[in-house]
Length: 193
Image 1 (cartoon, rainbow, N blue to C red):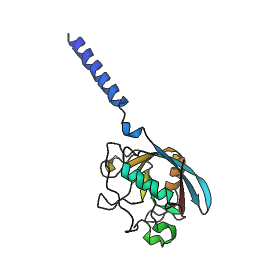
Image 2 (tube, rainbow, N blue to C red):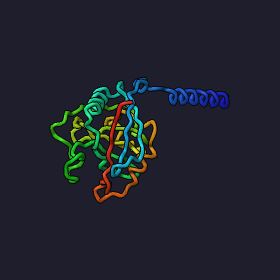
Image 3 (cartoon, rainbow, N blue to C red):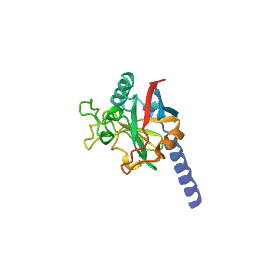
């Protein structure tokens, strides 16, 4: 009898675990696709393809889409790179302002309220950068190059890399200064696919 009870318990546990792993978040089914061309010193080093989830983070994706259409990201830099963590970019200051202002953002930019979800900050995830105010995201975003689950439910996940993590790895491993700024400007140019 004990063996039968143990067998049934294990079978139920396995069934439950398989259903959990197969559970899908329907908000991830609809995507908007973009390509980020990366240039260093004017030369392309490759592209990163991304898929955004408008049903998961509708305000964030709409803001990103508007910025892409306006060309706001073109010529901005990945200004902060931390191996084992992430690459961050999209600050308008990084287009043509002094390097010591990169990452500070433009206070006149439209702010987007936080849209937290149950999607974990794993390798390849796109998430919005922000200041201490959780509703202060504007244009800056980051790509996780490693799992960063400590950010879960603190930053807005809005997409993922579908191709080109090798390029993100090149960026994160570039020579950088003590403030994690790449020594050479790493520019992005984003187009809708």
